[in-house]
Length: 141
Image (cartoon, rainbow, N blue to C red):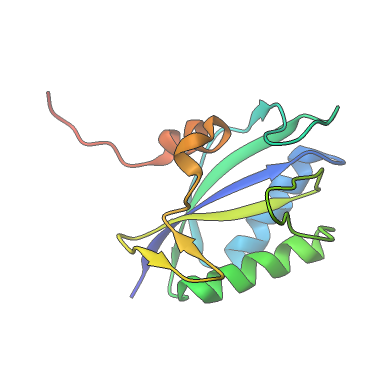
């Protein structure tokens, strides 16, 4: 069965646009068929001070992987693209790539490793602006 997986991508080091495009290519190869990609938007760092602005995007992927398999695959992609450490305890830092799982079908999940929907996505415009661009819209008045 295919599930609609929505991901948030961000980069604020190096060639940010190239990094996002490389991540999307690897997501297509390892997670599932990329169906929609938002515009890339530039945003200020959130939760920490940096002179390096972010380039952010959202993608929708059709996947047969479980949520944990998606998490493992995206974390491996982050490592391959140069991410050295994850943010811990609210301490954020510059990074070449960040990939977050936002939504996975209608699933609600809360484990020590993964919470879906992403618990902070609604607080972050750098997530919501690109996500709104690719979410299906309902027609009518």
